Amino acid sequence: MAAALPEEQGWAGSVLVVGDPTHWVQVSAGEIVSFQSFLTGRIARALGAAEALDADALNDTMTQPERLATHLRSAELADGNAVLGHLIGAELAATRAFWLGADIRLVGSGALADAYEAALRAQAALVTRV
Image (cartoon, rainbow, N blue to C red; front, side):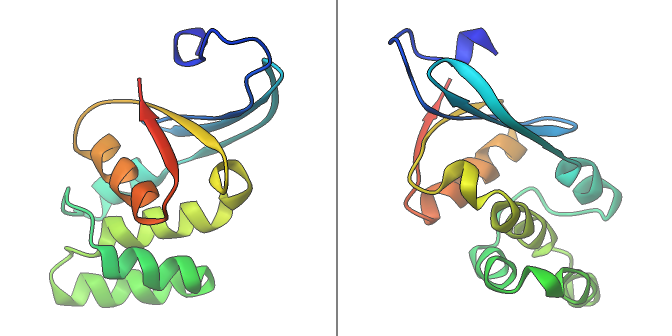
């Protein structure tokens, strides 16, 4: 976690640690002020999700996160390509306070981290991969 934080005194922003589980850490003045974890990657694997992010699915679920289960069923019946987009969309809707207008440090590698980065950039979020 310390490696993800910039060296500047009093930094404020969020650190997104992509993995199983994924952690969102909100930092203010160098201190952790809020923390949330999600099982998005694990659920995506369990549902056989494609590794690529579907931007339409992301937007559909960000605007209507309460319809996540319906969106996942529709994606499953189609071909499963939209599953990851729906899951990340629901997570971004739930963590809006962590990333909206914030300086985000994304820690992670691989396809899942790439999908999170693409999703955040699609929302015009300021993301730095560390």
